[in-house]
Image (cartoon, rainbow, N blue to C red; front, side, top):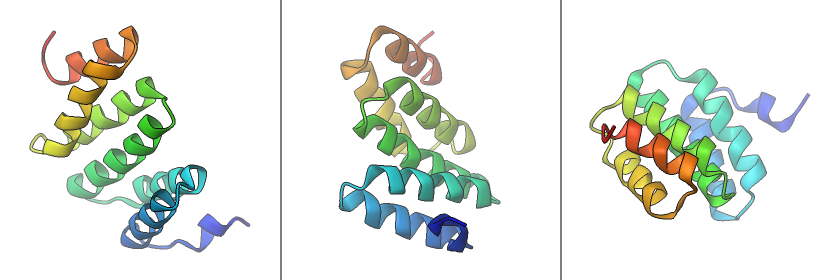
Length: 109
């Protein structure tokens, strides 16, 4: 049994993930946000879960995974301005593959 098994609600997972992220404990933040995605029931929850997990990926310089999560966040909530901003940052700072992915999610291609 892992510590993440005790996280039973979407909101609890998001709070816990944000706490871990603020303390630069990115592995635990990832697992908390991953569990949040698995507990999500609405488009808004999915979008928030994917957005936060994408930020963890980006902070780990895993830009392809980050672009995928930001793209999914945007698919779940087309008005998610934070996901759009993060995709823009990947276009500016990511490798060729992640830039291409981000452009596709933003409709540039």
